[in-house]
Image 1 (cartoon, rainbow, N blue to C red):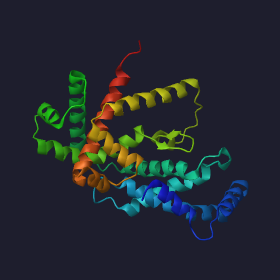
Image 2 (image 1 turned 180 degrees about the vertical axis):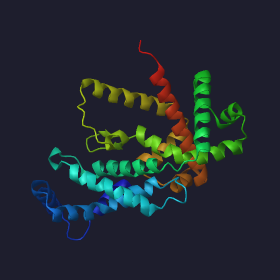
Image 3 (image 1 turned 60 degrees about the horizontal axis):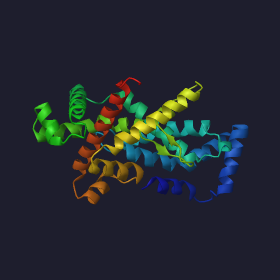
Image 4 (image 1 turned 120 degrees about the vertical axis):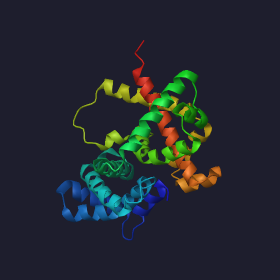
Length: 274
């Protein structure tokens, strides 16, 4: 189900017209009505299942999707409590980022990634940074395996394992498109009471520019996987059908793309200003 399809399902529930939904928002925001709050939670609950399904990709089998839905419900409730309808933004766009943030925060607190996998992640990141600094282009799997002194099978196995770690990384970098062409990062899902001035706006714009440059520097297949998965909302299985490869291979390409982006953005942060 695509993001738009998930949003459509929340609008097509029996008895929930746009006028009735607007009335619920008005009632809840004006009087903190418990009845209206509960009705809003029920109405938008399909969004939680949609986001949980997306986050579940690449997680180990012991992580139940029902648990992800449970974590995500806290994000939905928080979004309903903090949403400001008068600002003119679409609630679904705002809620998706909050739900995803709640799920990822809980997964981080569990810390189910083995230490050995984290060690492999650091080794691969270091190798990518070194090779890209030398060659000034994306490195191939063969070059990466040679640098690490691993076989190709060892590299692909490590990428499959690291897919669990890299899941949140791309969501921290990429964004959920908003109604007016704006975007929301994972950082936006964390409560922040500070006031962002011109410097904050400049840093956001600079990060977007660096990210765009980093994505353009990826191999074509890596860019295609990111586009189909994050912007077309395809599953990894569907992306594999488009590319004519297995879901496992798509997962490896996805993970390698994330590591390339992290390496390039980290390198850009280390470059001193002119």
